[in-house]
Amino acid sequence: MKTAIVTGATGMIATALIRRLIAAGVEVFALCKPGTAEGIECLTDPLVHVIDADISEFLAAKDKITKPCDVLYHFAWLGTFGGGRDDAYLQNNNIRYTIDCVSLAKETGCRVFVGAGSQAEWGPTDEVLRASLPVNPVTGYGIAKFASGKLSRLYAEHLGLTHIWVRILSVFGVGSIPNSIIPSSIDKFLKGEKAAFTKGEQIWDFLYCDDAAEAFYLIGEKAKESKIYPLGSGESRTLAAYITAMRDTVSPDAPLALGEIPYPPGQVMRLTADLSELKQDTGFVPKIGFEEGIRRTAAWRKSVLGL
Image: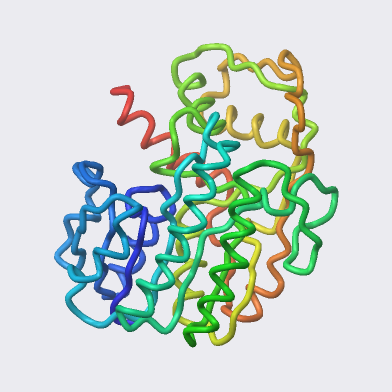
């Protein structure tokens, strides 16, 4: 891989991937929502060409991609959080924009399209997540991710592209959305504030963002046939164990209140990825343990908070 396109290039996994691509000497065309690239260090690297374009304008941006590319990584998505997750019209637009990105991949010479799917495509299940597991998405977001993966695959295969769909579990790290569970909890621990949680009986699987980036990089390098891969660490603990480890890593004396918050409706109780096929095809093995990932994330939050 010599040249790649990354959409949604200001997101956590996308920026981690761009850092990995730069380290490998890969030239990157980074498609960003206008006005969002400022202050993101990797986007100022000489190997990176920032293209300001709204998600609805990605296909039209092809004229700004000035050389043939090898892989297109598609991360951009609308309505990831809050009420937008069940906005049918908004999520339907995401499907169309994903297909537009397959067209963009073809028109810029890419041989591989890699799309960012979600564990939400499976819906609630007690099973370990693998590509062969039946899907039953229950949110608009999950339904749209599943439809995007299926339709973009049909179109990519029609155009002669290799299509990889990566169903991402829980990724955290530098650049995480601040109100998500790990950075918001770290902030409270750093400030010595009480952090309240559910009982934490959920069995979850957390992966640090640099490991996620490595997986995407290897997929782009080694993809030979269309596949679906779950992406996590492949290991799991109870959420209570993760939370306790996070507190002990960040600030052992910080107050911790497990069981003070009820489970929300539809709480997902198990998220564990089967990495066997991904490991077999690409050699991917996570290298950054949860506690080390927390130390790196905490250092970032300290900087943001001025502590």
